[in-house]
Length: 361
Image (cartoon, rainbow, N blue to C red; front, side, top):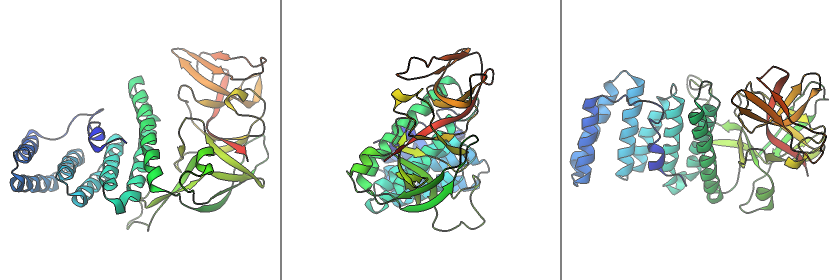
């Protein structure tokens, strides 16, 4: 599993430190006192650092100092105090998504060390992954940044799966919803799930779609700056659904068992037509869950409308190499050929990215 110390090193990966030299010296004094066994002195200096943070105006600096305080407190073995300090840092980091994602994973690491709070740790880690996935979609990222965020999401997902095997079952939900797509009759989609015992056949044959966070209550003064509860107590998850009274299982297309689907994303369910992606195990008996995006990531399976050829949209792999965009089929049928374009919206239109395939049971 990804450790506290690993994630702490990511804090300023794509930013500069905001801590002034006087605070840096105080932090160094605390660490020196701890190293030399002067614990009482270290605690006194740590309190000075926390008092200093309360007098500052710059949220970036306060966030960084509180994160340092939480890290030191965690190293001293005071888990409850470390969690409180780091949660304070999370609430102050709404303007910096990268730092918020990092701190939330650190919070989860602290919670994980306390057996009664392990379920809370999983929630904190899910929130962290959700923020890292938002970072992947941020415009203006360099190729190196986008690649690092994508790889980090994959590593965090794997770490979370390891944790879930220890924590146990998922939340229950029964809910109905209707989703329509132009050109197709609107299917009736019903979401449902039951508790999943560890090692069951279901967990091995179906992926998990996260839909909503669960709040204990609506926070005073409404939700946080993001429009959501910053401290949810759980997540609603499903492993299967019903379309027009027929049951379907959920299968991720991105190599991750857990599919995070924030509510601010526009999604739709579309019935598969044709066999252009049958070697990806996507066939005409399936549906796909699409997330609407302007520009896909390299390797995404997209639903694209190719002008003059396929007005009802076709499934293809999206690849961009310098000034060339290729829509690549993966089919046993030789009639399907790749399409090559110079830019998006010139000869084709992206209708959505496939995040999951819904296969009949």
